[in-house]
Length: 176
Image (cartoon, rainbow, N blue to C red; front, side):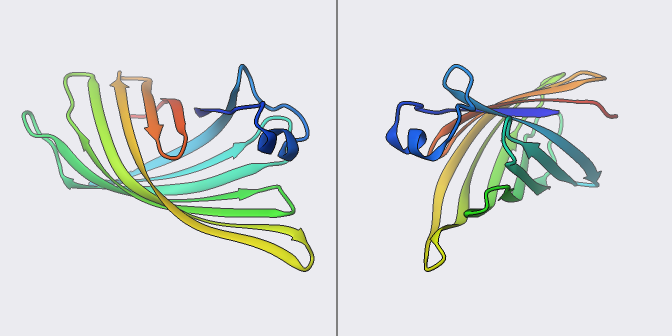
């Protein structure tokens, strides 16, 4: 299980005009997610599914991580990640995101701090009327800092990402 929280200015006119009911908690929109991961040698494949509270909005996506340099006792791990995501449940709006990041991490006993920098691209389309469709293709840079606590069971991850907006995530996982 994972969850992400993003700060929202609920007094902004765009928010008040676009969101029919308040789906925030203390000014944060939260998104719980179910994440399934499978290790593939030097890589890892993950898939996720999320549903926004009190709406029909769902999001799903996946990522593939691959270690370029496997860390050791004194050397860090350098990995790349590719991501894809889709938002569904809004009849008049469609968005897909793609991303690529490079991660650097170094484990110290059960603590693994990491940082990443990457690029995110989005392809969004909104249908205003049958004759008027707005489209936006954009990109941005994202920075991430995180800490993974690797106990036998469970593993816990805390993460902060800064792109156009800042988000905070936590994940609890079980596995060997």
